[in-house]
Length: 389
Ligand code: IFM
Image 1 (cartoon, rainbow, N blue to C red):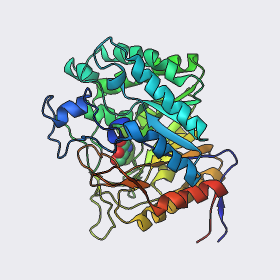
Image 2: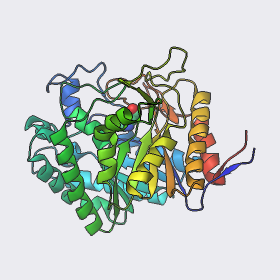
Image 3: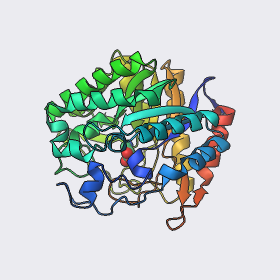
Image 4: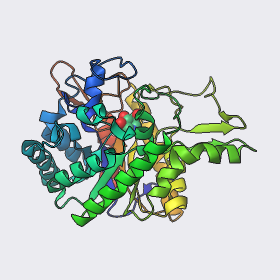
């Protein structure tokens, strides 16, 4: 078999989210939930210091760049930028601006996410995305954050709005298997919030999109209508709402088989990852193809990866996923980048056990411990190709 080659200019990187790696995100709704100060499904472990990337981001970015990657996607934290309603911290704007400059200085294209699951605690206390005021609140935050985005090309407004819609109900924990349907009026608000943010971000000269959690809904023979119906509120409504954006982020980890009565259980003999999901590397190909069919926008794979303690399985998974990305490209789909989830082992919304990182770290000293998969992906990036074998 020949090497799998990717187009020139392809972005190769890794993604993270603020709450999952920064640590001490004390003014966020998640932190408050973790400590029982806000209602919500019980959280097994609090995020605490997480990976202390708030202070160690230069080292984290340097490891990615040193390995050969050319892009880094990270999120800015609304709860730090606006810790109290109406107070915008200039120090935090400067902090995130320094992150953009640091990435650029290292040769990493910064891709900035404005919202990745967490909200300020004050926003949650007034009802969060369940209230009509949420859209204006978010738009005001985006406006305040624009100085961070100066000369940033790619901005993701909201990460996985389909998950945000599910999580808007505080009684729902982070789902480990399957995705419940979103809350319809929250979905509508998220679409409005996205559109407002796109306008603001474009006005500042960046290209705007949002990132959708796709689930590779695969219909058993005869269950095509059931699968289409199942996917509509969970995925398609968000991919459709991307129409008119500059790009779309597609994220995938596993598949969901759909039978006549809905989702089917994972077969007992299937390999599972540490999140309990079926090991299924080609899932990202299904997501890319569904997105392309619905909105025709240039695609960036903004997340894809595997929770495993066996780094050889991470390499194997990523090799398989990149095969599916390459096959979509050879079918004429405009895929412009691949960002692995995740740069670091991180806080998987209630637990540190499912390790998704290319880089591990010592929980006592925070010493960074790059894994072989980082070197492997860096080589792929340098070569612009996945070597045969
Ligand atoms: O860790 C999450 C991330 O925050 C959003 N996408 C899926 C990842 C793995 O569950």
